[in-house]
Every structure is written in structure tokens, then in C-alpha cells.
Length: 449
Image (tube, rainbow, N blue to C red; front, side):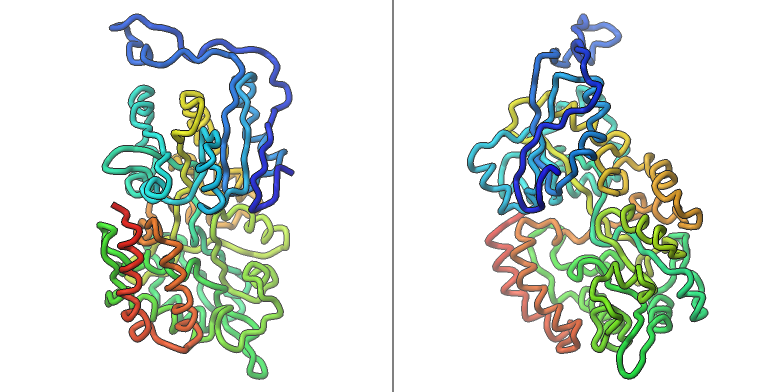
């Protein structure tokens, strides 16, 4: 193994069979010729170079070797050193402060938020223009949100994560209670009332305890619900907290009704399904639906191996139907020793979902989704992969709150209050507006612009 989560472990990853030397990436071309644009490329020799990649999550050595196999076949002298388990800014900061060599970083925040805290992101526009690199293959709204600062590109993304990337449903449980299967067409999403009714009918009680729930949970309680409405925690200019916003309050109360009045979730009072883990509740047939954060591939394989008859469902619609996805960003840094080599590695890892597939994630390049989904979920011919292949095309951007530099500090205030709302101790309309001044003080302390 390369390391344990939460630790920073460094290891060179070598691919088997990489032994022959290679020449330059691009030769010199006379200005004004057919390939004049490529004449600006630096001549990168086959001399030994080590590119350092910092990762949030830990990848096993065999998976890392798979990811880099084609890289070493083409560039056997250009080594990649992984530093893993730097999953929070607090863990990454000592490396930055100590001047550690960081050629490339895999992260999760917008580059705006990251650069506000660190200032080390490297501008990519010159590389994009030089190589005529097609950024239109990415979701345009997502790239604007996470990758650009004042119109300039500092970050791309290698795959999609997020707190609500996929809705799984147990086909057998739906049939048992006579609930129609949820839609597989995003244009024909079920209404919130239809969804809520289905979750109630899928909930079972015995001797005062809930023994089966309609749905396990719903992503991140602060941000996931808001893709279904125009509710916001913060204004689009990143400056003003809006915890008194009527649509925000209604959206949160909609979920609170399902938790408290209907008792249809794992967080509802009186639930005892024999397990406390959300995935296990679905895996053992005690929850009708399960939503997944990150990539859907790994849990899907577990469900198929367990013999579950499962499928993907589109999300319910309040005002909008949308998954909640957030891109996994990839950027170069000012602390790197080999930015030109790092750019070549960045492109390699994004293409063909080379990095994302090994984490079970939805591809960043939208045209890769159909092929990836067909291969990844081939163990279930009735998975309804059309739900997943459209995810990144139709997904609404999450509230900018999720990408604010003060996100973690804001969450520490909001999450306990939401926990009281889910527990029925308060309502959104009573509990959230009083947080306005406290939250605004945090935003003012960590401005995003």
C-alpha cells in the first residue's frame, strides 16, 4: 500500500515493461510553417525528471501502476512521485509552508478558494492556448465555477465527485409495496410529492420501531438539497450570507418533513434497521433508496455482487431535478520544479478518465461518460446507465457556499443547527435566520474576492 488515509506518504510508482528511451515531445518548427503553433512548445528531453503529484485520497500501488502504465510506456525516464493522504487544507499547509516540491495537486475546492488560502495555483491559459487544448469538453458552468479566477483558467478537473452523484433504488422493495419504479429520464423526473409518498410507502414499522426506511440520507445536509431550488446560503458575488432566504428555508423544511413527519430516513426518530451504516442498510435490503457521495462504481459492484436487483434513478424535483456533483480538481502549482512536464502529466491523467476511473468516478470529459458507464456497470444489464451518462450534462452547479474559502468555518456553525432541525427540535424558519450575523462575520473574515 502507498499509505494510510490522513498520512503523507511518498512513493515512486514504476510501471512494468518501461525500459526504452524516448526522444523529445516536440521538435523545433520554422516560424510561419503549417505547425507554427507547436513551435512555441519547449523541447522536453528524455533526461530523468521526477514530477510530484499530491493526492487527497490514497490509491493502492497496483492501481497507481495501472494509472501510469501508458505514461511510462511513453516516458520511461519521467518518474511520478505520489504524496498521498493530504485530504484537508490543514494537512496540506505544512507542505506548502515548508516549500515542498508540488508539481501537481488533486483537490476539491474551487481554485478561487484554494488560491485565497495558499496563492500557489499556476495559470494554465498559456498551455491551453499553446496546445489548442479543448476545454469545451468539460461542463462549461462547472469549469467557470471551479477552474477560473476572473476569467483565467487555473484548474481543470479529472473526474466528478460530490455528495449526491447517484440515486440507487432497490427494485424488489419497490415492487413489494407497489411503488412504481422511479423515472430514468431527467426530463420526466418525479415530483417531490411523488418522491415523498414513495419514501413513506417504503417505510415499515414494527412494535414502535422503524425496521425499513424509504431512503438512507440525502448527501450533504448543507448543500445537496439546494440543487433542487433557487435557495442559497450566499449571494452569487460570494459576499453576503442569506440564511433568511425564503426558498432556502422551504427547501430545508421539505427534507425535514420527510425525516420527522414521515420517519422515512436513517436519521429519523425510532429507526432500528439492525445497522447504522447507510450503505449496509441498502445492501441488506432495509432501505429502498441510497445516495452515494463520490463515485458510484464501487458501491454498484458491491450491490451486484450481493445479488441486489438495483437501478439508477433520477433525483426528485422540487423546482429542479438535478444530481449534486462537484468536480475533483487538478492543478499545477508555483512550487513545482517541472511545470511543463506537469502539464503533460495533467493532460494524460484527465484523458480517458485514467485517474477518475480508478476511484470509481464519473469522467470529467463528458464524451467519455457513455463508454465508461457501459463498461463500469456491465455487471448489471438493468442498471439504467442513461441516468448516469447525463449526470454531468444536466447537473446544476452547487451553491457557491460549498466553494467559499470559509466553507469549513461556516459549516461548524450551520451543521449543529441542521442536526436539531432533522431531530425535530427546531424548524428552519425559526433556527436559521438568527445565524445571519454570525455567519456574515466569518465570510467577512475570509473574503472570496
